[in-house]
Amino acid sequence: MAGQGSGGNVLAALCSFFIPGLGQLLQGRLLIAIIQFVLAGIL
Image (cartoon, rainbow, N blue to C red):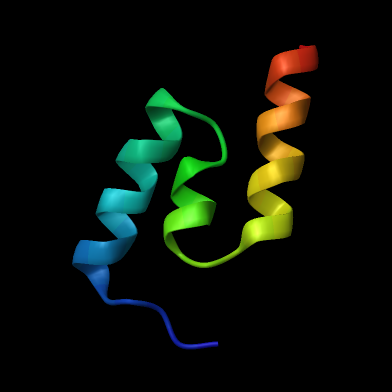
């Protein structure tokens, strides 16, 4: 799977730092984003 480039990866990493799963959502990985968000809420 091809990435969005280093700029997209950095943005996704920053978003995930503040809201778990948001970086995955930005990269189009909806299922993983939901799982990370729910697990972060549980923990």
